[in-house]
Image (tube, rainbow, N blue to C red; front, side):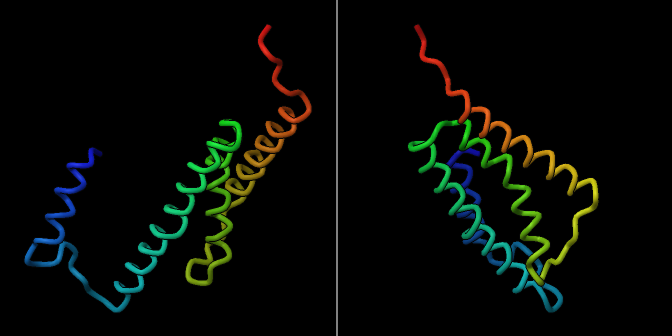
Length: 118
């Protein structure tokens, strides 16, 4: 999305006379607090950390972090009492394959460093 489009949407959200979302039930505040925490916590900190890592580590290491993010999110979903969602066996197996691949890439590149061009 272009920055001007985002600014127009923000202006519309602020200037509308009525709410953009109809609030009903007892939990909307809790839900909005969860989404705000997701935006401020993992999204903002994760993006900032990746930008910093790109300057200090090889690009393949930083891209492997993105591969591991769903595994971390699954573990958070298991651990947080408000969510407490258990992954299926297929998800656990896929996570195991992903972690094995990440460890393999990191180990391979540590054992055999890239050769300099002649």
